[in-house]
Image 1 (cartoon, rainbow, N blue to C red):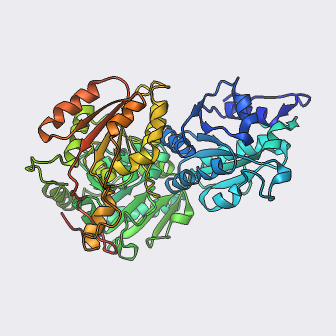
Image 2 (spheres, rainbow, N blue to C red):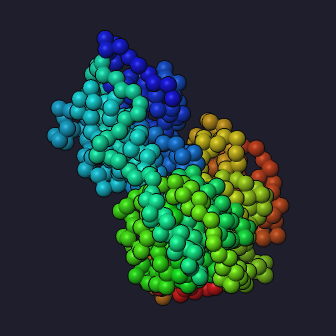
Image 3 (tube, rainbow, N blue to C red):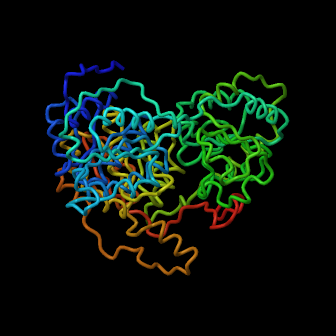
Length: 566
């Protein structure tokens, strides 16, 4: 990337420094919402080449930036004003921190003399975001600004990726500086380990040669490292049964011969049994969260656990790890691929895993003809899109059904809120993905609960010519909450069923979006095909069974092999 150089005599305002720095970082677009504290910044953007995508809520801006960042691997950029503008992005910052999404979030702030004096629209965004960012800054001197911006992008995009906040007082954006900064920038205190220990890799490969029941567990860290090709090569070379996390779906095609499916609370029988019975678990880029390792102290009790992660904090945090390997997943896999197998394959173990996969796949009642099964909807969308769409979900039952039934083909294909489980994520994240890949098919699956949290972002679909298909699975309830109440709380459906709902199709039409409602099982395939054949954004509301549960399921506190509904 060509650096922008300035003569010392050339003075720039803080606002100019910001815009110049964003251009230097190769920023393609900003997702933002203006306000008083950031007016100098928006005034500077008026003539800039970087477009600002004006969402209709700050939460929409940051989730759209997350979708863009997850789909591209680039840093998503958010610009909001002080006070409520900043606090409205806190949920998205926490979401990005949980899922290791690279963001730079620029928040306006009151002028320096007013900080700490309860000025109009002041909020302590540094204090608020300290636990949910990789790093945060408040710029108190305009001369610091070029360095701060370059550092923020470096920190967000290296090591374990994540969100960085730059809190920018209004007077700093108006002050002038002759300071300049050329890439790259590093902080002496920030030195992530990318290259793993060769001794530890050698130890892992020696253990692998002696193992009888090995399994690979692959997570989003492999995607972040752009290491899908190396993972596939390693699995093929050693013929290893493989499980992915929710955020690792797409690393292997759904029909890959060694892929056992998603592991964890709503994972496949084959995947969870493999994790339970393995004598070696090679975890690459997964943090053993509680939706995967549902009972951490019981997870992989028969296994030697090897954990490859770029964040040393995650290793040993949940599951006892005998072979810790700190480093980038791509670098680790490249080292592992240099070794040559000295023994045959684990044929009996492979046969058992594949037998379980064949005999106990995901299932639902396909004989039911009186109501539409949500799983059937996802299967039909998978068929219509040939498994090639970018798939975005909100959070809830539909999220798990998509994970179970959509035929994923490539990494970064599934964009969803994993660690934080943020309802309202789906619609704006899908918009961000379409901005990232305007030529690709983008499908958003959303529930009737999450739809009502961020549907105001429909306002920008036609404005920017976005061709997103929204599949609204309407079960007239907060489905996952209702499922837990029906399973574990005596069927007491407390505040989980919607007594009234808006006409979602008319709501979409109010934004100029074409919509249809599907409520007859026999018309599902034809109506879905008709809707997907239309150009432009579409809302497809499907009235699905109001009593369906996501199965299989591991009950709270139970280990991976203790599944119900298999």
